[in-house]
Image (cartoon, rainbow, N blue to C red; front, side, top):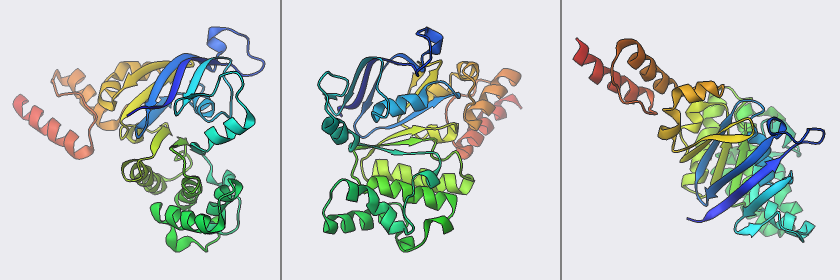
Length: 289
């Protein structure tokens, strides 16, 4: 794998902020996101995670540092509007509220909107729309009105619209935050399928620890800086550090942590689903009887 997105000492502050460390939205961060990876970015409100996503998509321009997309430095002097346009085609973005991203009155027309604006030929648009709707499981709703869909269905339509533009990477910026548990499950299933089957690089910005635990790599941001990074097991077993960053940990991990603290057990601390967590507890508590 090669780095699809690379930050080198990137900083950004919003207009009006003084140039002080604690007022940088993003402060001197460096990171690599490899092609084909599923990456989660976590952080409390104001930690810099959404700002980082907007820098990746050139919605924002850094005050200092270098950003590379697919091997091209997008912060270099001489970058043209056409360069920006070509780079943005590689990085799609799905936002928190699907209603802000859906623009047409028929599902298939909404999915076609992006490719049309890219100047794609009509026959290719038709193929892309059909393919994108199939990928997100919304083929049967192609002729439906988006406003009659559930929140999870709307978000899947928004995702299909991005897929139809054929990006190498899709950023999901709190894309499950406004959904109920069923809607979140639908969208997460779609995200995982995009990564594993379609080989699309995924960047998931989320408050939900159990969603982030599905990723290959996790970045935790705090005060505009990268606070923790690594595989989910490496990050989520740093329970006290995550609490200090104002974050929760996956429920199974927290339960094992508290049992070890209260009972003096030495159950291996790891990210696990409920069945694995129950088995770990059963196997280790039997020894106390």
